[in-house]
Length: 259
Length: 256
Image (cartoon, rainbow over all chains, first blue to last red; front, side):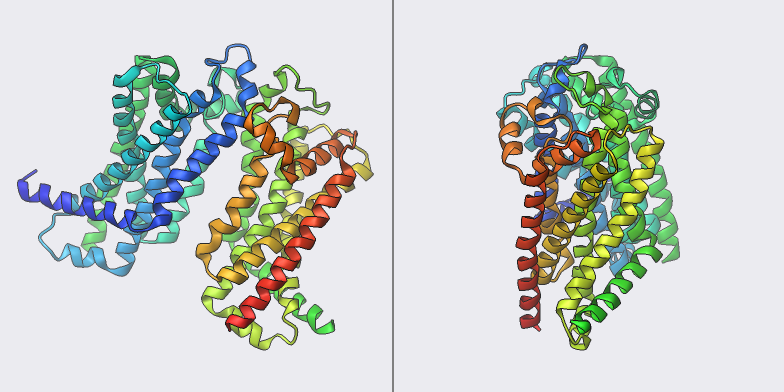
């Protein structure tokens, strides 16, 4: 990537961040809602730690992984709704008339989303630490956690950008939220997979990629350096990112051709 | 009064026509409660093995009551979203000009919320029965359960209508939704009240929804408890939110 392309990517990424920061609802909701859900689940499901084989005696530590995935999801939806608005309002068409390369448009947008997700992740981590959670993987684990969050955000962001570019509709991108939410709830977010009693649910959670993202974050918090779980998390995030990026790039070409 | 009823009939017909003919409204209303039911019953059924969990009719029935009450409250809240949308599109101004009795507008939205919830409740109940939910209560108990949910639906609709009439924007959706969400989830959702520990036990103990939830679970297990308190709370919520909604209507009228 040339210096010019880098500068263009930076400018578009900055725009994505600033635009989000200027809308309080888009900043506050992704920070507060996952924390509320964490509070509700940590309180309501604390009794689950009494089940034989439960990996920790702190449900808060166990559940802290969820906001990282949920927050990335919320940030992605909000920012890609704005991206779809750019398409609806014709901003992308005008941008296409400038010397900015198509791929830079996409990379800039994704970079902005990842920045927002990392800022959120720092907030979730700080809240967790403030309420007594201690990362079993230590300080290095916190750094890996932020790296993993970047990968997770990239995965969701690229899929969200594909939806925005493919449909050019804010409603369609908003419609992704329930879909992602279903994936979140049908995962191992509330209970380890080996403790899920219903076979069909365990199967769904096992084939659900979100389970591996949550379990990788969870491993860093409650287990330590469980390389297999962490590696699976990065692999799933990487695979989703590649699929999303390829789809989004293809949709971008189609859209720019149309203009 | 006749005017109010005819306006209510017209408004509720319109809302229900939109609801039943538009997949974007119908599907989420039905899918979300089912999805919560599936996620909680499928994923968390092992919780019944936690020492002290002694709900007689099993975890499916335990969660069914929560999902039924949640669907009732949210069917009301979703109706508030529709009111806000009608304000944004300008339809409400025309409706207010045309309606000979504006209280009928509110009544119409509330009636539509009841029908919306009845549809969702029927689907959720069928799915729960297909999932082999055990029912310990008799016909009267089950009538009590559904009556309680219906009252909560009314309360939810009146709350959301009051917000929508005051803020008159779809951006008010979180204001309608979030307090209801918090009230519902700060109740004993996953385990009975006696198994909650720490701050959540304190919050759940004073949360009015807890009484509704426990009464509902008493009905389905055939051992009614807190019945009077639950119905008193539900009626109190309706009266309070009816005043809130009607004052909201007056505020919308004053705003033109």
